[in-house]
Length: 155
Ligand code: INI
Image (cartoon, rainbow, N blue to C red):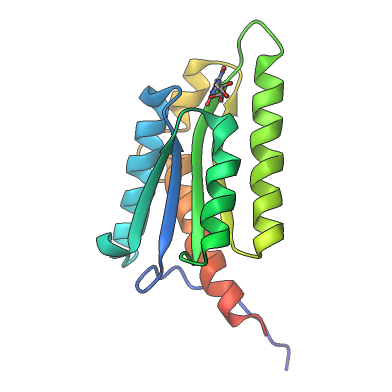
């Protein structure tokens, strides 16, 4: 018999840290709302959720690293919105956010969901910060829940 190991979408009992950047807050506020909706609708308890605000996506990895190192969380959710402008600035911020978040996850072996939008324009960002499943914050929070439960199950 083949063994299949999967993580449940059950947030009850999980300690979740959310890092959200203020830059483009008209988008990141919606991502945060989506993430909280996902956790609450899957059994998450308010007292087990902590939100850390950072200035921009570039600062997310440092906060994620410190939070991952603390041992206080079962999983983290990173939320940000990097929107392309007229200069290569976008590339540096998006790449550093992705690299730093991935790095923190692998260093501390804790699930960290990547809910940082990297889009060509504001319209694309808003499309991905809509309601329910059209919200990348919602999706990222569910990924964090699934991975937190999965990593408990993997021997
Ligand atoms: N930060 C973002 O989160 N999104 C952006 O689109 C963005 N742009 O385009 O500049 C951005 N810049 C700020 C950056 O994240 C840092 O906060 C800043 O460089 C200070 O370190």
